[in-house]
Each structure stands twice: as structure tokens, then as C-alpha cells.
Length: 160
View 1 (cartoon, one colour):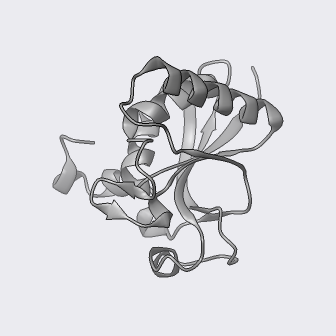
View 2 (cartoon, rainbow, N blue to C red):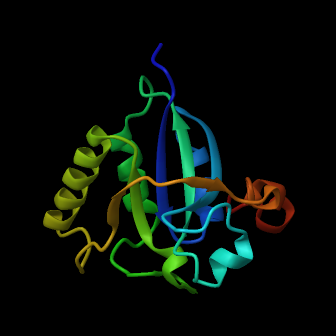
């Protein structure tokens, strides 16, 4: 059995992104947090202000014997619009940017190849603007954000 690997993705509000990745076979755990910014240990309010440079992200711990990083990239392309800069649906701001924060050169190469293939496929009517950047510090979000939709099952039940 292979060791668990990690991946970090930004794709808008982290609540729905986390819920989507939690459904993928081979995903062991997820957490939501902040990455790509300059401030150490930012709060949700600071990130939402747009002044820290962070994106809302999900960190995915996965078993590569069950699901590949490339398969997780395919999930990412399916669960958000990678052609809108700093926006997903009603959420607007740099904290909602589409991003892949790679943890090694293999992930970087896979992310670039996957983005290029999606762009060339014509799957999206506009060019993909997803940034592909080396991972910086990952700061876990406050506890009430973790598995938010599961905690709110009565409110969002049948959707997540």
C-alpha cells in the first residue's frame, strides 16, 4: 500500500469544493484552509477582505493506489468554472481564484498537462485561467468551516 499523498486546490468557496472531493474513492481526508498569501495564520475575515493574498483552498489527502493526482485534477475541472478569474458564481475576489498548488514537480507537470489538454479539448468556451503555483504555507481554516456542508446537512441535505 502506498503512502497517502496530498494535493491543494482552489476553486471558489471551499465548502462545496471540499464536499465534492470527499465523495471521491481514494480520498482519505480533506480540510479547508488558506494558501497562496503572505500573512501567517490568517483568519477567515482577513482572507475575505482580500488583503492577505490567500485563496480559499481544500487540502486533499489521498491514496494514490486508488485515485491518481490526474484523476483529482479531472474532478477539479468538473466542479468549478476554471475560465473565470477571481470568481465562482456569486463569490468574487482573489480569495476565490482557481488554483492548483503543486507539492512537487510531478504534480506541476501533471497540472500543466491537464490544463493544456482541457484548453485544447474545447470543453470550455473560454481559456482556462487556473493558476498553477508551487504550494506555499497551508493554513487550516477555523473549525466551523471544516466539513461545513456535512455539519449543515439539515440545511443542504440532498445537495451534498
